[in-house]
Length: 175
Image (cartoon, rainbow, N blue to C red; front, side):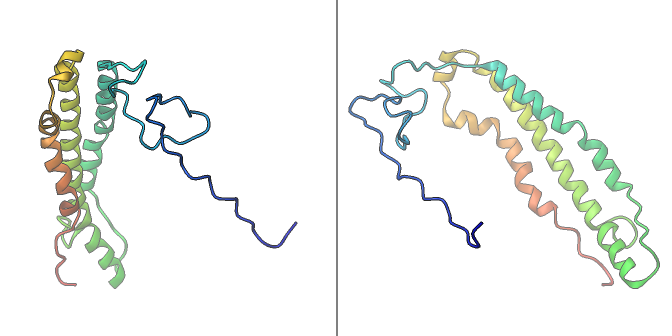
């Protein structure tokens, strides 16, 4: 066994797709296709637009399973009772986690974060369910615009953007 490491050779450079024949499978086993079109690209054989609302509904249901345990976590944070001991550093720990009188610190900050997460995930869940109904046919999807998609998720975006701010605990007193 040798005493030094020999790294593997670098991968070969990617080869650009040959647009002359517009065949995404022409080099499937030998080359990387950097400029391959998406699945709905024009003039690409054997590609069709398919609207699969079952997948959207499954995604929405999966989002809903993420929401289910969060209210219990949120209420547990509000009733947290930290008792680290009766010495200087223990008081610092208690103050950081629950505040001086149990109404602040990280516990209350994360209570707000989890509330935003619940609201944001609920909005995503509902938006995806609405999209599954609204875009149930290829024709519906063809008439959709980028603004339609951003409007569907706008409510959730506000909650998710608030997460970093809400994660900051209130200023501690007497530190």
